[in-house]
Image 1: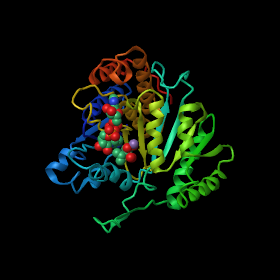
Image 2 (image 1 turned 60 degrees about the horizontal axis):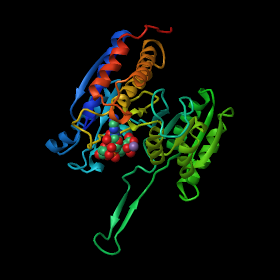
Image 3 (image 1 turned 135 degrees about the vertical axis):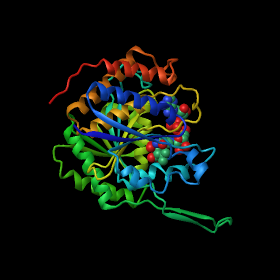
Image 4 (image 1 turned 30 degrees about the vertical axis):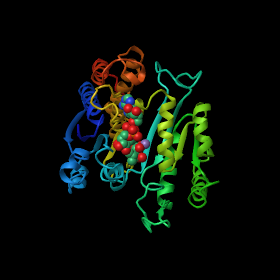
Length: 367
Ligand code: NAD
Ligand code: IPM
Ligand code: MN
């Protein structure tokens, strides 16, 4: 059996508190399902490292990480010490781009036991995937400032939409929709206001849709789409969006299912030429860092996504993924819970409770 090599990077703030819980759960699942995982921790890609070295990562970061099967990542950002665009463009956004992790998959699911902030919604009513384009679009460093300090000061910020980049994320999203029972896809747009890139995006949606005749698809302007996440979340199955729209929708979706502390994500290079990266959707939460009260479930769920990806959704890795998800669900029903879920438990107590359930999971592995 092969060993999977994982690079673990805690980053900043609560990344340092939730990553150890994620690792404990992964190690428990690996033992239970006889999966060989070797984990190597790195303290760079953090603002502490930046303050000591003047850069977020060592020069050889790419070659170092390229030797791993996956990256398990906490969060980056300490905006009081290092400007966010410096820390994020110096770490996470480099990973996404240089490892060509062009799919950012962000599940949104209302789980049993979690109080839903939307009225009259039950588990099953909210169960969709946000598929976010992750390497181009509105996230760009192309642009500049002119006439600085004068009344004519001018700032230009370019978006980049390439045929290659747009088509590949759309194909990925349509294929995902095709593989799901409801076979529905919603493409976020804003072609009424953004006059160049979004009409192009719309055209490509229509063109790519031709390859998936059994997928029922629609376009929605992102403003009303956001409103419908709140008003009609049962309407969604796969939601595909450009980088910025996907970013916003993937905080809103999990907020509709209780707390951002549950939101997991997978930054995928589907071709597996480069390592993929698994991280919570949330950030380093400086406002609660140091109190051991952060919810570790987003990190733990991201670990389950990592195992599933590593094992191609089959065999022991799939079984371990399922066991972790069942453990999350069972602890959400029984407690202990962190403050964002209405409880009083610490990060460590919630992590330990999930470890305990995983250790005693039934050993069901389908061939
Ligand atoms: P944030 O996600 O860090 O926090 C937003 C709010 O949600 C805060 O009130 C926080 O306490 C709460 N929260 C977040 N995660 C939680 C958890 N697991 N349990 C309980 N509560 C949780 O967003 P922000 O405040 O906009 O950003 C803080 C820093 O994190 C910034 O530097 C930002 O750039 C960075 N950030 C990094 C990532 C990443 O590394 N992937 C993602 C988002 C933000
Ligand atoms: C996320 C985060 C990042 C993003 C930031 C920290 C650059 O918000 O992963 O959603 O905008 O992609
Ligand atoms: Mn975000």
